[in-house]
Amino acid sequence: MDDIEFAVHHKPGLTYSPLKTVELVNELRQFASLSINPLPKYQIFTNADDKVVVTAHIKKATSDGTEIRELVAFTSAVLIMIPGLPQGERELLHTGLTVISPELRRKGMLVQLFTRLIVHVYSSRPINSRLWITSLAEVPNSLAHIAAYFSEVFPSPSKTSPSTTDLLIARTISQQHRSKMLISPTAVLDEENFVFKGSNGTYGWPGEVFKKDVNDTQYWHRNRVFNDFYRELLTGEDLDLLESRAKL
Image (tube, rainbow, N blue to C red; front, side, top):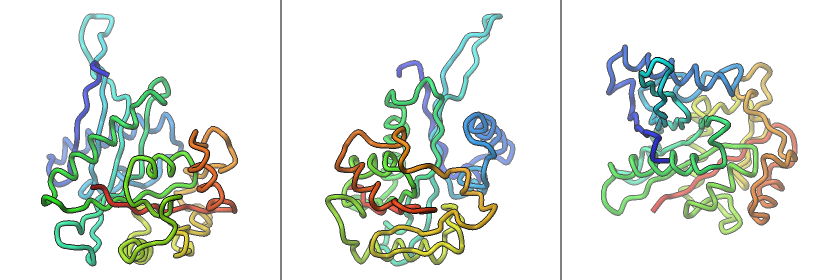
């Protein structure tokens, strides 16, 4: 991927000029609209003050010989305060929106985006501190990727009971930050498994655009153990599973 340029945009709503912020968000909207319809009010498409975005552009020459930069992928994450976490670890990173051009999918782009995202956020933390990360999904593939590459993931085949910190994070999210993750206000949190039941149950709720069929094999992971574990937890209607984990 030597011909691709990556960039990290840290809280652009606070660090960029209003014009530059609008230009960035509009570019992301135009690109994402090719894959997601309608675009939900979610992640970088809402408030840009608490988001971290990693973009990937490729340089292309036009017919007249000029060079343009074309957006081919991005991931957007939101930083969320969890007051009960230790000092220096209270800003949790919630991953959530990744869009990749079809021709670059399953070619390592996801790893490239997430590596830059995690390194950027973790590098600003105190030495020896943890970076707590959450993800919310309803397909085995997304959840299995997190379990495979991060430590202390709950729920996962290697950690089947939540820690006190896991419960603190899940409860704080459920009580205070549902809108940032498109969790319906009527959804019920199963604290034993971290499954939100009825997460897209409210009619017209914007999270409906992300609904997937857990039995559709295109959303399965190649690791059978991870795949079967998450499929069992997601069996039912309108379920989303919240993962909590600590990096390093």
